[in-house]
Length: 431
RNA sequence: GUGGCCUUAGCUCAAUCGGCAGAGCAUCGGAAUGUGGAUCCGAAGGUCGCGGGUUCGAGCCCCGCAGGCCACCCCA
Image (cartoon, chains in turn red, yellow):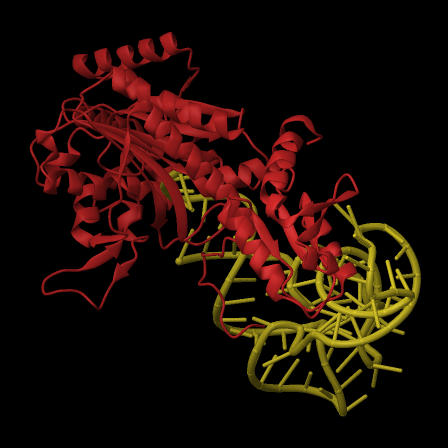
């Protein structure tokens, strides 16, 4: 048992997993650029009030999952690690006067988020999200653009089995009346409700809809649906979003019970969902419209929409779908020496290759040649550069490891020879 | 935050009834001192998650804690 270990709910991303994350981050970054969303960074912590006011005081994320930094705060400030990205981005939008830029402001952010949750596979206290926001456009076309962008990401990442769940949760004009209707629906059955659901009847009736309790199934099936109770403006917006999605060929499933866990959502709500193996977290991402959030955090009334995709869950899903692809070689060339004790020349030659842009390492240990070549072969390197007695005449051995062939090359020609052969190998040779 | 299952070498796992802690893989070395992934041989690697209890004796039984996982809760 080691003396220290990674804190509960966190983990080290070792070489293989880190590469999987890096590939997803590159994919996200490339898509953001292609769609005209600009990358930004916000701090990993903010004043706790940014999240409390933005996300909602009575949400689970704030009530029981917020990582508060109790000490180390400035006068009158309490800080918290960010549990999601949107509130911080909106804070930055207001602080930097981004309303003076062309609207909407389209941004993208990738980084770790923190929630004090009870950990499980796919659910961590530090986890990574790709977050995309379009602030300043009331939609509905931008709603569809955002949803399609998420679909594109999953498809390009290699997950074909991701579904879009869609709902509209109304706005301040129509939601209060619907919530009251919902209460009336459940109230006669209050005596039969499980305790936790009884509390929700008052605090957050929308949550009742997605309860998994079997006792709730019949009641939920007969519950009034918010999509039937939307005000004219919300109904028109929702219909238009669906029209745009249809035009893009994006399949979705209407999910009347889909309710998002953060208070700031209005109108469009969606989730990316994977029908998967048991024991997997099936929500891979989610998002929605938040037309009141900018004002809530002190800005002018400004609409917005965005999503957050859980990169950890994408990596898990990819592994479940058949795992990582073939292992990429770490380097193109390994410089080895016939004299186990002579390491200077190996290091010098490797450094020259690197300076010429060739991925190379030298065997710096004082092992015999056979062991050095064994190491190079196991790394799947394309070449071994063998430094021996010929070096006195300005020559080295260049060995093609997969081919098992070897030739004498003038040291001056080494870089050119490797570059040429490696390029030919990659384009024509076996994978 | 609630309930359940699990924890033995770096990894995956054995260990009969409570009686000397093991294997495969990986690592390092040798066969083979200027030629590699296979093969053979060997070495190293352990606070049996941690702490307490029962017992002549605990990896195994009991209690507590931690961590992981599963179902909730919730969400990414």
